[in-house]
Picture 1 (cartoon, rainbow, N blue to C red):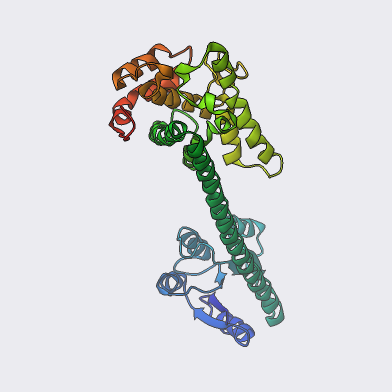
Picture 2: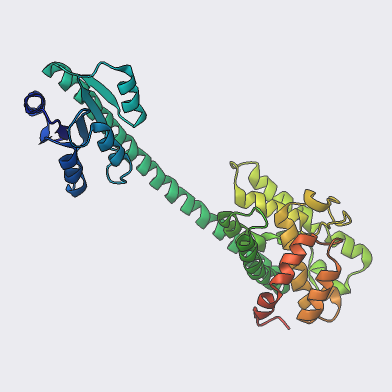
Length: 355
């Protein structure tokens, strides 16, 4: 049974209101505003509606509703003012303080019941809506969780496929993911770049997809790039287009998906250059998606430290110096500065296959 508190210092009005509603609701009669606030704060389950007299000798109804609205526990309880005043200013004041209704005295029992019934119905409707929203949110959370699991599975599937073609490439992608994780965490902490934590989590594991286009290349192009001719190296550039177009085919048959968008941009644009001399689209500066600009740095760092395009692997210090030297030509200079700020953290990362 719904509970209704009636607050009125006039015992006649209090008894009349109680008799009008007690057949339908559990009534809590209170004779002063001060006692009402004490009861409301102490009650484990507050009333569903408060009928509140405006003019009371200790503290008036306006004070009571103001105190209620400042209480987290009481702020959502609907307050209906009861008053004998026929003053529009008083009525406006009551609504401005958060009252949901205004009933003038003297009132009939029928009118009082009908008005309270309306507000109880509104409460029931609100509770039903909140329950439905909670169920929808739960279903959405489960759906997002399932989608995330599928995205992780896709990444691991392609990582496994790359491993079957080239151990060098698959291990490179695994290391890049780790470097991306550390770099992205520092970028979020700095708040210098507009990257949300939830997006960073997607970017971290999607970065393993950046070389997926190399699955389409022949074995000749999966060996140490130092053994390739200039023409073969140019053909090797096609892995950016092959990978991104494979992702685009999936994007064409599913709704908007950040994982796919980020994967596409990183597959296609991680070899673009800040000065516009990269490939495949000759993009420059901020026309290059930020996820690809971030990836370009960590991707190059790992290449410098391992295969170094057919040369001897560089030391950490040498790799950092090259990244510093390429700031403003190959790489976004602001991102380079951010990367240099965490170079000790990057150096502390260890992999069995990193020299």
